[in-house]
Structure formats: structure tokens, C-alpha cells
Length: 592
Image (cartoon, rainbow, N blue to C red; front, top):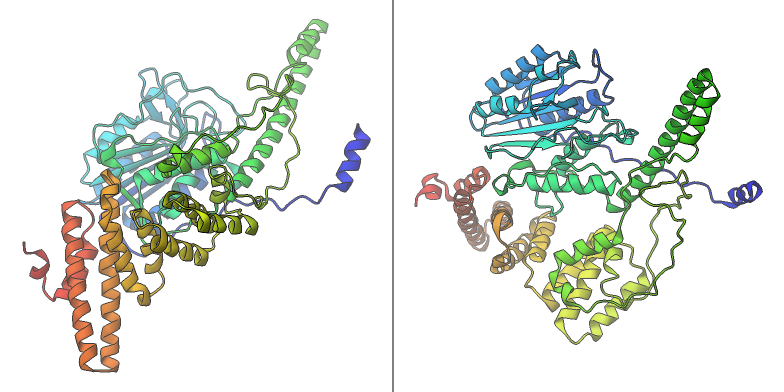
């Protein structure tokens, strides 16, 4: 069979250029936060334990994130690399003392942890004693210390393994003996975000960082802002990181705080980074699987060779035992493959009305060989991976539900688009038109064609239905980025979304309404400023009247935003500033 493999290799196309993980860097905010403080600790080189690779790079990344993105000043930044126990405790105490009232206290640790017999999760300093882990500082101590500070909120981020793996990608260590209850926290002002709910943190070597740190920093800098409202909340960041860890094929499960009162905590805002395209994660997942598989095989061979050499020193019986143990010993690799059915399920959950459709007819069952590898007995064979580059769909458009994964990946062929357009023209019910239109909008958004997406959204809202407030909100956000000439449309579509605000509830309701009130006020302010410039250039009665009109609307919209933000405990600084600038007095914006 070797000649066949060689012949196939000669005819095979050259390998595709490997995908690269998106650069993380740090987002330069420019604003300084004089109230906040941070302590960032990275322990890579342990005196009496195996090193934790990439812990230093993770700490540097998080330090830059705190300074550049969150605006923590150098005087309130406590960065420690390979600290001993005393130095580590001192840094935590100083940061807790330096944070000011209404500020944020950031606490970050990258290294190795341990679960002691008393059930405490402890973070190990560089001089940790393996025989005395109870002497290391516990997560409970850190929480209690931080809770006594003047901080309005405390965010504790831990990228540490608690399973003796040192975050290695090639170690399948079991869970720690006593699992810590990461999320059993009574104080809603203190959030603990762990790399894995079972304590099994791992590195992601292609990124140059721990998997969790890389995803978490990216999430807080904008990758998790999937609704593009310019804000990243705790629940958005935590949910996105957990999802993307699986999208990379990893079994690591970063924690998600179950307390609803913490979900709206703001972790990122302003001019955020765009998220990497969805199709990139599938390519990275396949490459990561192959890389880890090769590492596993190499380690498997090295371990077998070491044991054979040891057996040869002990005699024939030991060699026989070696053969019996290693001849059928499997190589194990944990990989979460992309599952289109999961993508389809998420789409269905976002559009519940689709769930009432009749079940699609199933194809004939596919026969499977009994020799297929099972989860219990993985085999040391990896099939060649085809180039995962984009491949367009077929031209048919009969299966409404079956087309949804293709729409989410943005791979509709021109023939399918034309087919769906014809179905929309022929459809008798608005429900069918609505579902078909949403497929086209999802496809355009996923492939990055915002011009086409805008056209499709406008058609949907004008000709099919305006009942979806999220769609009105998305169009308003999109138009707000296109300049003052679209300001009146921003206000129009924000008002249409507010008409259907009853579709939302809970934290989503609060966040969406705050965004809509902001969009209206800022759009009115832009139009007012533009009108003032026109009045200066052409001081006519008509321009004077127009300027006064938009100044009044700016005051009304910003006051409405300010009142809502105050009542819902959202940030009020921007709303108050706009209101005062338009009204001319502080009292006009604060009197009841």
C-alpha cells in the first residue's frame, strides 16, 4: 500500500496556508481610571515544581489590558512575576488598599493551583512547598481581602490548573480530588472567573497564551460584543469564552457566574475590537487537533521506548510484560468537533417560531462499520484533513431549516440566493416570507457584505414586518456609524424598536432600552451640531429655526435617556453631559 500512498501524495494539491490565531494585542483606550487598581501575578518558574509554560506571557497580556484598555494607572498597578508567598500577599494587600471608592479592583493570577484537603482552592507562589500546600493563599482569603476594600466591584480572573498538569496541552489529567465551588459567592460585587469549572486549565500554544487568558482578554476588548452595541457585559464575555473554547475543539469549560445580579457588570465599552470571523474557528480547531495529536503520538512513542529500555535491564519476563501492556495500548485525544446540528439548534432558539415547522424527512440511515473507533478505544490514526476553505452551498432552497447553518457561515451560492428571492415573491404567508428573508440577512451578515445586509434589512422592515425590535435596533446601530446624514433614520428605527420593547425582559430589556435611548440622544446631538455649522455658514431664519428645533430634541431625548439610566442604574455621565449642553443649565436636567 506504500506505493498507493506515494502516488496519491504526488497528485495531491499543495497544502493550504495554515490559519493563524487572531492577534490579541491590547486595545488602547486612552482614558485613565484613577479610582481603579490591579494586581497581576504570573508564576511560571517554580522552585520545587514543574514550570507553567506561558504564564509569564499571560500576565504581561493582562497587565497591558488593565493599563491600556481599562485605564489603570501605573501607580495603582501591582505586577509581580514569580513572586514568593510573602511578596504575593503583599501585592494583593496593597492593591486592595489603593483602590478608591467606586473603582474596580482587578486581580489576575496565572500559574498553578491546588485543592487542599479542606476543600480550599489555593494559588501557589514560586516558593510553594509541595509537602505543605495549605500554606499558600486561598481563593477565599483573596475574596475576603478584596471585599474589605473600597472597590465598587472586584473582578478576579484565574488561569491556573488545579490538576497537576501545569496547563500542558498533552496531559489528560483527571479532576482535582475536591472540586472547589467556584461560583458559591455571597457578595455580588465580587466576581470570580475561572479558566475551567473542574480546574483543568490548558495552554493554547498557537496564540502564545493560555487558552482562557487569550479568549477572556479578547472577549473584554470586543470579541464578545456580538450585538455590536459597544458594550461587553460579564454574561456576554463569560458565555462567549465558554462557547469559543468548544469552537476550538477543547473540552475546557470556563466558568459562568449564575447570579443574574452580576450579569450586567460592564467589562468593556467604547470603540471595541471586531470579533474574528466564525469560519476561522473551525480551521483553528482542526489544526489544533492535528497538532495535539502529533504531540500525543510522539509522547506515546517516547514513553514506550523508555519503558522498553527499562524492561531490557530486567530480563525476558519484563519484556513479555511490556509487549502485553503496549501492543494494544490506545492513544487518547479529547477533541470537540464542529457539530452543524448545534449551530442549527442555536438558530432555532433565536427564532422560536421556526420550531413549529413539521419535522423534515430523514434520509436513509447510513450504515456504519463496527470497526469504527469508539470513545473508549481511540485509535492512532488521523484521516487526512481537507482544506477547510469556504465552499459555497448548492443552489436548492427547499429545506428551510437545513439552510440555516449555511446562512450562519455565509456560504449561500448565487443560485440559492436567487432561489430564495423567488420563494419570497411566491410565498403567500408573511410567516414564510419572514423566515426566508432572515436566511438572506444572516448569510449577508456572515459573509461581511454589510451593503447587502442593510438592503435586506430595510426590505424586511418595510415590506415584511417591523415587529422584531432587535432587527430595528441592529439597523439603528448600523446607521449610527454612517454619519450625521443618517441621524433621522437612527431616531426613526430606535422609536420603532421601542414600540415593541415588551418583547424583551430582564437584563436584556434594561440594556436594550439604555442603548436605544442613547442612540436617539446622540443622533439628535449630531444633527443639532451639524445644523449649527450650517447656521454659521448661512445665517437664515430657516436654519436658525432648524437649529433650535434639534437643540430642543437633543435636550428631550438626552433627558429621557438620563431619567431611564438613573432609574435602571446604568451609567449616566454621557446622558447628563448631552442634556446640560443642550439645555444650558444643570438644573434643567436634574429637577424632577
